[in-house]
Image (cartoon, rainbow, N blue to C red):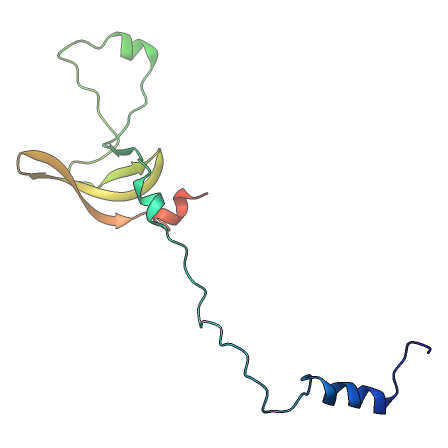
Length: 121
């Protein structure tokens, strides 16, 4: 035999086994419409460092050496302007300071860029 099948031999093989291509064959299992999302609850337990940056100032070393207990260093933000919230040093949001039950808190007023997505880079 030369390794090739004639059309009749091929047809017989299809009919002998259950290899027919008829429409009555079992339907393929349905795939879910959207891929299953992995369980992300593990990541919710990872601690992150949230900091509030009020403002900053650039001064000379001489000015810094002249600082005493009555000195005032002027910062680069206006009073009442939203403050920067950073997560592990990366900008995350703008917020204002609030007091809740005697503790300071942050009221988020604007997310920066992509929010948490930016932290993944």
